[in-house]
Image 1 (spheres, rainbow, N blue to C red):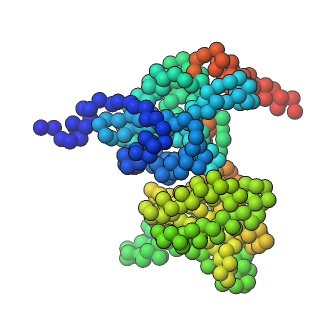
Image 2: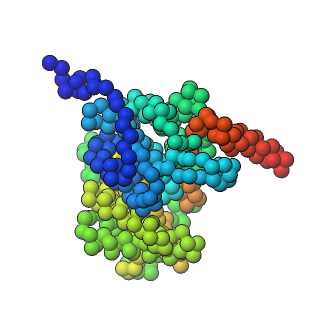
Image 3: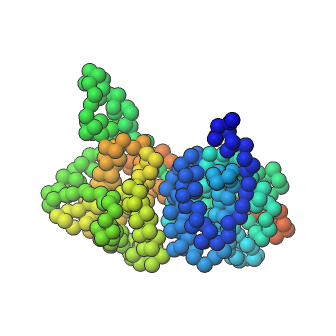
Length: 404
């Protein structure tokens, strides 16, 4: 008799279209199990994250989830939200768009890919081709080099046009835990170093790689800030609902205290954002991956970050700080504490996520590029929009730049 794995591999790969939110909710356990076996296990691809996104940002639109399985095991899945568009992006022609659940608050996009990722993705593409009702598919903020880009190859092979637009260049910091441990072992004449020493060595390696002026300013401003009172960094990661809600309220307040509050983009100003981040925090706390950090001065919150720890990475999702203390760089002081904590946990990477910003580049210049992928059905209307948006306009823009 063959093994269970051999029997599973002999089962046919089948694709089903799951309609609606309730049916999507039923996929949670199998979804997350598949993600852990796939090429890209990240928190924004987990079922809980996508469910929170759908329930807070798109509770009404039609949702279809294309799922490729062998038996009960999921190998690939793409949730798609339908929208009827007629704007500058469609050249003011009416188009039906099927998009992955992703926006600026997602930080990074993608689809679920499991153990047989390539086969599952190819099967889903064939199902999408057979399924009518869409003019274009849109996958937002895909990391360059991700397996999902095979969809573009499948589309081009079958005569479908596609276009891409670079959206994000996100800094990320590889953490030097292995090098730090090796150096400590050598210095200690092969005696096993304590965990604290390894963490301190790793963080010291991070600091040593920084620009000397930034490093000196960071230290000097830390000392001056500490002269004002007791400076304390704490992480809220427990499952106590009351304590978590209090910490979230503190974070929302500090995040809205500066330019985000003035500009109307702060989480606290929009119910859908409060609902989304609260849901993310509660789900992450249940599985021990929440890292909600608060930096306090004499008990008053002066900076905060909303992060997740997942599969060896620290994902920095949102930050806020008291701009009245900007000369002391409270935001950077908090990031310094978060990186130190990541070293202590033995993590592999600190991912700053989001757009490239100067304060992130103070820590690291390595960038992870992302782009939007749009696939057009080969109809006259879709071909026209593709030609204008992805052929004519880039050429015209290049010509205008040369003229400047």
